[in-house]
Image (tube, rainbow, N blue to C red; front, top):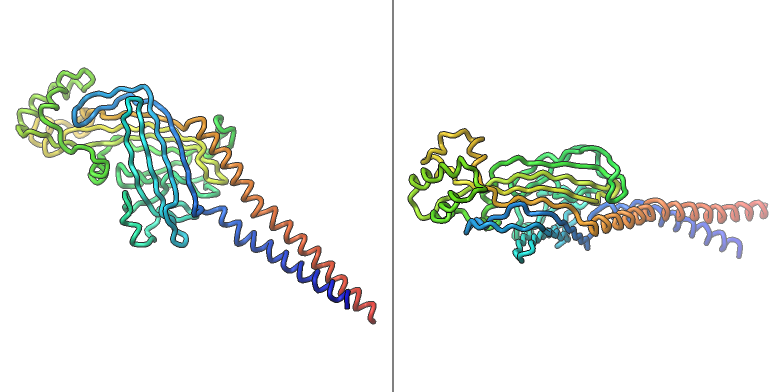
Length: 353
């Protein structure tokens, strides 16, 4: 009777251990390949602000240094979808600060923007339909091109896979991706969201004639523009250009490093162009007459790169533990224990024969 009880316990324990191993491997491990409910991420960048002009006053604000912080967190979840809050704060030494907060819905596994989300999410600040990635990568990043959403254009642009490299700053193997947008009109919806001035006082515009940094052709044409447009304010339009490189750890999708250059320009709106000598110029030449409002470049700080490396190590360790080590230990132990119980049953049967 005692041997029968022991063998039953061993077989039962073996089954439990094998089941637990499969649960860990198939049920728990996949969670480490998805965006967690409590995910928070802070990335800091530093760089230079080559040009900065207050569009309202047309005064130049020059600064040798620029600090940018991006804070990303999960605001809500619904099944396989997460509502992500994305805040960016830009600071320069003079104390000037620009802060924007947007929300978007992501598939928690692919990290792609999705149109499957609760209706209530659409009322979050800065929420509108998006496609592609939001500079957040999935686990097991593919060696292929993706699409990157750019709010400035309100559309996606190609995110090119540029090869596997040894990233010096992190001492890690990384996938390098690049994304660019040549000078092109900024979406009117983005202009409104950023609260950029849609007109400039005519008196302020006159000051550009004495500004040596302004394109000389534009300075010569300004008198004709102002003579043709006699209202107190002049409608303006904006264009945006950017060139960004990302270094991503391929197993975890963690961003190791980023380098970017962004250029915001302003020019007179099309309704003004059609009434002035500017209308006779080719579109490409008119684009060169736009005034640079902001020209900034920045790169991840050393602390951000170090934090990303630490996060990679923690994520890889957790994934290996739950996807490999624990399942193997539990399944092997369960098989050994279960086999021992089965051998006791066989031995008991033979002894009773």
